[in-house]
Image 1 (cartoon, rainbow, N blue to C red):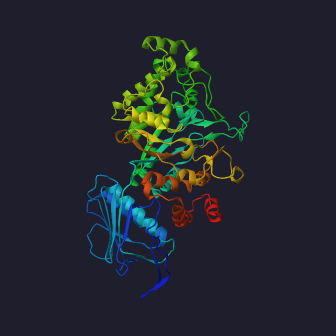
Image 2 (image 1 turned 90 degrees about the horizontal axis):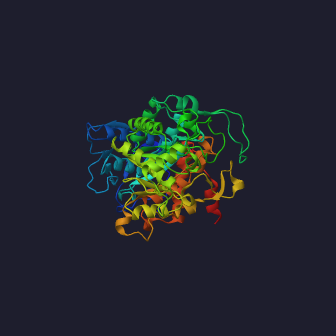
Image 3 (image 1 turned 180 degrees about the vertical axis):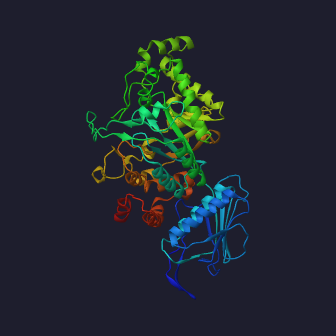
Length: 542
């Protein structure tokens, strides 16, 4: 079903009228166009947006809808909390549906109503309405009479951003969040620290940003022995973090912060060398890869550090889940460290079929962090390596090394999120590597591969499948130094991922998706987003 745009005069006004197209991305579950003879709703300058009196969240939804209308068609619509029966877009959150993000969008000649099962559901109805509008300034829009009933397949629809390898200012983070909102993403996984820099203020540990926020230089290209000698870095203050958290929450996006531990910690060790097994000296890494210097798991002061950092993180971020990494932690230092070996002996850890003694020491480390966060009413999430040696009770597993980690987690009763590199790593190249502005890895990940991803493995029982919370796209930024290039890497692949996250498998068709993406590209252009235009050229050539 495709409703083509019209360009006709609107009778008593000189403004042209165009017709809305409900075939948006992600595709709604049900679009029921009413009798073609039924008059639709005409959006015009006098149209008002209404919301329930006293509902501050719906008021913010209304304000955002007014911004979207202004961006798309240039109309300035008034917002009111007075109920209207004509010439209005009415926002509510009274829909009876077990899925809290469900919505129903109804268009008649007099009203457009968007009713969500929650304010978040209402917001996704707003996104559908927004994306159905043409990109044409100073026009009227006719919306054909319709009933759209929609809800997401997965409760967790994530996108990750690595601001540790390259630092991005707060305004760039907000623009990134705007892109996620356009694609119905509801989780922003914010990677804040790594060997190459510590980029969030921790007031109880001020030297983390004083010494760890800026590196002296960065390797050039793929030459691990090179260094451009250009200082790079920065950090987010508490005030900036709180502002960004609110900005995301206004768009119904929860930010999940990540402080990767016990590995990927050289940015912290340069500030507090006593937390390492060797005592240093350390410096913020200027190359990519994995440092063998990690937090000393046999040092009591390390556990005080965990509490200081995670305590402030819990105060800044309301997310129930806090990401503590757990990936790529070399055990060489622990094998040589008297303190770590003494801790292994104290805990009675032994190498067996379930893992090495050092892997079990990491499990002890992660369980300590998990137990501490539990006192704050939070739960940990970590990369699939935290399954090695035994995951902490209640931990959520983020499976990146294929899908096996998620399947193992689900079968053992742990919640899991799918983010396998072969489908979800958007730093991978999109076409012929020679087409890339900057090379990251030679691995190819074209948009059709992203679209083909199916998060639910057929070997899982129905009960086990309930533990698969959703899927996530990851953007690692070793070779992504600018927001423009980050956008190019995201778009249009994030649109493909949005249909993986939102749509039921029987509501997906790649060729039809690419047809719908034509209008999405117009929205990208209007917003000034940089995107991989060759993805559309390739489709034309087929």
